[in-house]
Length: 496
Ligand code: GAP
Image (cartoon, rainbow, N blue to C red; front, side):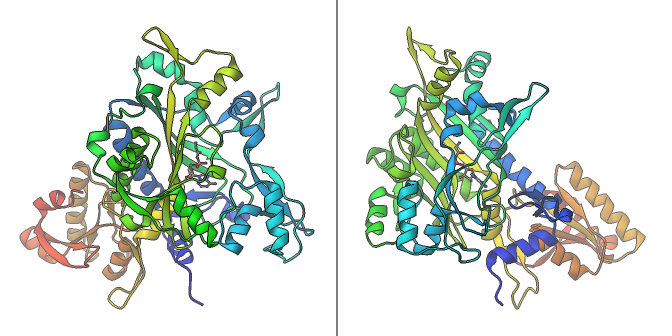
């Protein structure tokens, strides 16, 4: 049987310790994965690249690190307790399915955002049955996605956050006062989020515990078209799926959309997006994705249709990536206006407004919300290279900045003088700030294969000639070509 790309990627991921099911020895729990030693390195590198691009390079973004358990009034005010649900139906044997997704898979139409009644009608009209056993499906109900818990002796009800964003709104006034930040400014958070998904699937693409990197940009509502990054980003091209295109396709019962290509400048000036801030947010993401090894034509922004967006939204644009199983959201970009701060003002009875030229204002918010796990899976799929005639093993072509190590150092033979020279080079490269692996186990061909399989860009081999002329070979992962260099130059040549 031909393996799907997902199966191939997961086979290597499991074998090489990129990721694996949590609590695997007890049979695991659907929708929970751990990152192993290689996956954790890739994840850390992705976070470092993101932090560098969106926080360090910008003077106006502050990072916080908040708790994952928050008291229930937070989620009452945010609307999660009442509205954060997915439509589900159970068959007589007790299999629960997420109904909008089931319809999308069976009929290739968009079903997200439809009411339970509309979904039930589609199920009945198209005689859709339980995907596990084929039995008829029961009533379509709303299934709450929040994980609840009780806190301490007083057993106060609390919830695991379903997004990192809420801590940012809760601490908004503290951060602004402590940093004396003036609008516009951003508050970022990287951390875990939890959703009790009905049908987790596609490895880490839909899981119940995942990580997000979110920024809330707080902006004077009168300055939504004065983004400080506009000049820098105005020429960046965006692949955009408009709402009109989606309506046209829906008439043909299709979800096969074409996108138009517009610059950030045109997206703003021709009003494809609600404001300059949103145009720049999308442009920034395109530049970031170029660094990750995902081709430009596999990245697009879909203007969410009205039924997919909450009533307070001024426009949502999902960054979608083309996976082997279709286009899927990886970043949610939302113009949330003043909804969140206003909701928490109502819920907490605390004033979260700012005073600007003698007037109280509630800032508007642009929110890019990146999913770390989906991004990692997208990187794995797009950099995966299957084995072929010239290379008898599969490998990952990670960009150097994402790769788990810059290089591996390999003594060709188990001879003490070669091992000593290899160890010396290893230490030197580490001192120069490289992340380096040392591998002296097994035949050299096997060691090259192991390094390729975890996407290490360079393999440096110390051989008997090294002892004569102080040179070593560097094998390039992408071309498999070897070139010989002086040991003293190797560290410089490994620089990303
Ligand atoms: N604060 C806004 C927010 O959370 P979202 O569109 O629900 O927006 C943002 O989520 C991103 O988080 C998604 O684009 C996705 O990458 C990631 N994400 C959401 N649910 C996920 C899940 N169950 N498993 C893995 N990643 C998920």
